[in-house]
Amino acid sequence: MWCIYGLPFVHPDSYLVISINSAGLIIELIYLVIFFIYSPFSKRRKIIIALVIETIFFVCVVVITLQVFHTTKDRSMIIGILCIIFNIVMYASPLTVMRMVIRTKSVKYMPFALSLVNFCDTIVWMIYSLLKFDVYILIPNVLGAFSGLVQLILYAIYYRPTQWDTTARETQLFYA
Image 1 (tube, rainbow, N blue to C red):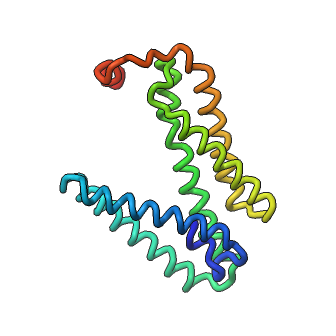
Image 2 (cartoon, rainbow, N blue to C red; image 1 turned 90 degrees about the horizontal axis):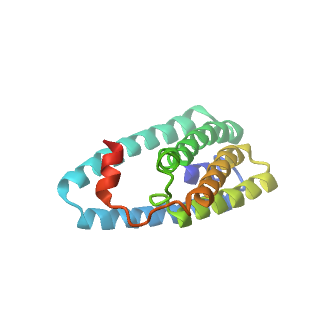
């Protein structure tokens, strides 16, 4: 969705948005190809269904946006709101892991590098959005930076008490 947002006929002068997100899209497509090569059919089928649904949704959004909304301001607003919603969902996804960290007092299943990169990424996009005065990029990245900061704080609090030698069986018992 961010690739569409960055197009000149949706949101002019967003070349950085489209270039960065297009590179990310290419990396994701490579990952999907590798996944399809090495995964069993049952898992491939689930992903194919999800991709078909996403593609239909995406095409509908693009067609409706281009046919119904005729100014870049209106197009930016519609696509921007959708981008905000999807980014908030993405940045909220670690909440389950954060809950587990608090309950178990262990950061074993919360990768530090991912939390750090998430935080740094959102900070960079926040700075970009402030320089460009782009509220659609700012809102989800403020929330993402907050989420990343909370993850880093949790990591700092619960790193020492973490028992790194616990087994997967103990984790399964936790979720039972």
